[in-house]
Image (cartoon, rainbow, N blue to C red):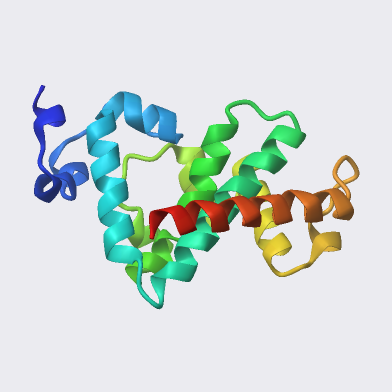
Length: 172
């Protein structure tokens, strides 16, 4: 199909030029709907355009935040934890693009709960994202829940940071 034959140059404007009938909630769903090649092209383009003095740390933040959100979601028994990872990863797109979040994601075919999490920190994904951001500040007690205490959050966050550092090191 046309979508699978897009070049790297054509991959960027696809969201404006191609109307999806489904909203994307996770990386897995993006791959299914858009095709692995297109998703790889977008990811590579973002990485190549984003690794500099300013954006290098944002890549680490995106990876660790995504992994922290996923780990918290797993620990709390949420369904489709990859959607939490996806939300955490996207939570830095505003900084990457130097735009307010609502503008940065306006043309992306994202599920309503992902948009609500990114823009308003609403819903389960939004609460998990807020917890991950509190972990980044070392505000463990602010993020803790009765079913997930501060020490467990610290461990999840440190594991996510270690994974993000290793993953980013493999990209450069």
